Length: 313
Image 1: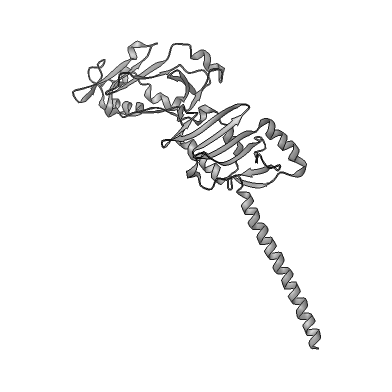
Image 2: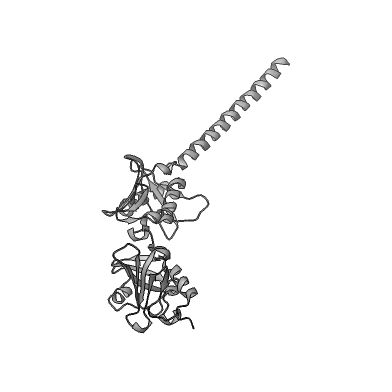
């Protein structure tokens, strides 16, 4: 009887051992999977000083120097884009390995069309991978250069084309602030209408107040509201010649308006040219330092006031 009981206990013990091993294996596999999901993530983005993105022999370099992030050492990086970049680099997760039957196709696609991404901290390479995918299907693939297996990646909680971040052009990384000043430090300001000179006006700072020489008595509420508007002007998009052909011909015509702002102590005024709208287009073309810019009409029209609007009736 005791022998039979011992055999039953041994069987139960064996089952418990097997269950324990299985549970440990599952738990260990989960831990391994969690670790694998972060294989493309940079845990501490504060240490990132440089991100290189190369495609077809051309590249964009985003680098931090003296506390400022720059685009190709030429332009300030847009603060919103910087936040998105660091967030993606930190939160990107490997969702699963690409199915074996698709791996060769995906690897070929990454080789031909992928974006080579290198992330540095000081002089140390923190992370490297090639990014690409299918934008229409909203699927992104990452692969490390030293590994054969590509992964499907995503941002947990978001349905987004992650690889699209690396397809952004130089202009779209740039800070979009065209003019940032304070009307308390503006020395002179002019809004010229080359097509309608009678609507042009200027504003000067004299005897601790702003005057409009072309208007006998200016409406101060309209004047100060206008100056607030021109103190902070943001572009919707920087563009290059040929990018949107419909605007190329407009850029060679006479501007609709030219805004000139000179701060106290500065020798030269900053100038923004704004061109006439195109039919069926909600964007207005502008130019600043020979850079073509697109402004949303509803945003920019608030500064396109005429001399007669300043008159205090």
